[in-house]
Length: 190
Image (tube, rainbow, N blue to C red; front, side, top):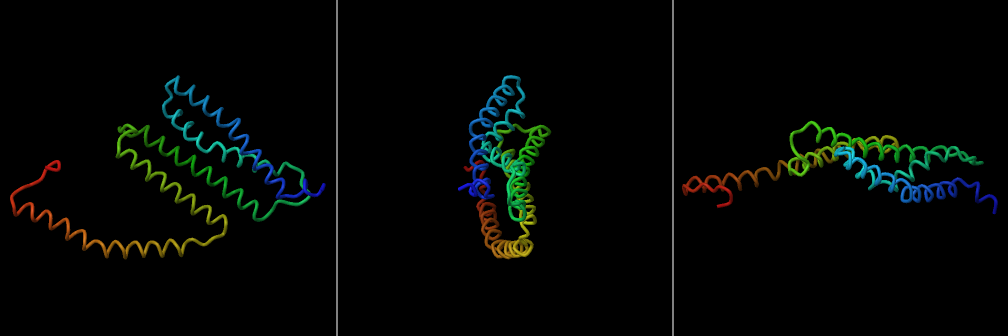
């Protein structure tokens, strides 16, 4: 029975559960309190950042404690796959934080408020780009060759775009020609 406490998978499982518990019990209320203070002091961007961090507080707690598992004296070395998965989880957290940071930079230096539809589209594009780079880095860490998949998706997307362009160009060009022929130009849906 003593061997189970020195098993690497038991230690990883326990640290994962403790990390999730710390994320729920400690990190989430701490971030909530910090966000409330930031809102009172009118630090709007910091409030927004801390509010988004609250959403991943359980993952933050788990990843932080999994990073500290190296301090636990195990008889079995934690090398190989565990290290790769740990670095991949760290990359997920870093890509999330970078995405939120770039959104903060965009919001701060653009003249649009965050409720604007154009702004939310840019938020989605920023997240898409940052998360895509994160996925590429993670696939590189895990030694999974994603280049051929990306090339196939690019060629397939180009083929679909070229196949559909004729259909949509003709449809919208036809609507424009009919509007000009009848002499009625529609404005604001009327």
